[in-house]
Image 1 (cartoon, helix red, strand yellow):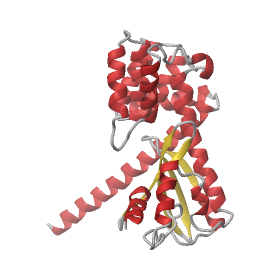
Image 2 (tube, one colour; image 1 turned 90 degrees about the vertical axis):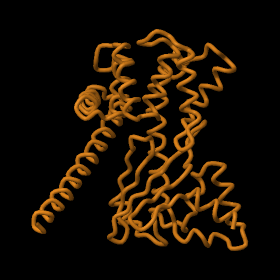
Image 3 (cartoon, helix red, strand yellow; image 1 turned 135 degrees about the vertical axis):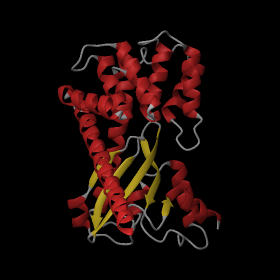
Length: 299
């Protein structure tokens, strides 16, 4: 009996590792497809997005595939197909982009009968999220209140296509911020100092309040960017890998003194994106920069 149970446990662990491997592989392939799209390499982007969407039900890939169809990039333009793919991506959990784009298509009647009330309902739901508030949805709602007819089509002259350029370029901007942040760490700057330039205004205020507290920043005992008190700049530069996650966040993976690390960054984006939070999850602890700063400033 013990031998049988051991075999089951080994198979279960092996199965989990295989699943994790393929999940990471999908993320890497999606990031490559997204990067190729942003570089206007549509012929390279399309088949990857199509395979990940159709075979893996990868929500963000369905959103990317929809953008291909809506704009006729490397495929015959088909707005109805684009709408269906946005819906598949939204139903699959991509609130950051697919659900937002789906709302805009309802707003403009692209690939579906125009339904402004449905669009506003979806935008309101995306904007009111507690943990995953969609800033683009909030901005669009505000615009609709002031200019009821303003929509994706009317913005086309300025941005070519609102849901195409904004969502993809915003994600690229997020990745660039994290790349710039780690570039500063590779020059052996003082702990935490390079981070300050990339914080949002509200988070920076929390930081300043915590720093001016009687106990200073004693509750933040390490640098959240590298998850340590010190780092090897050369090893960091050699091992660093920046990638986008399906939820719109950015993941930094690297090694520091031989130990593998990964840090997840979430953002707020207005005129420009800024780091809104840093999350580090390990077996030992679950760290959130915002929560820690609130604790620092209230103590």
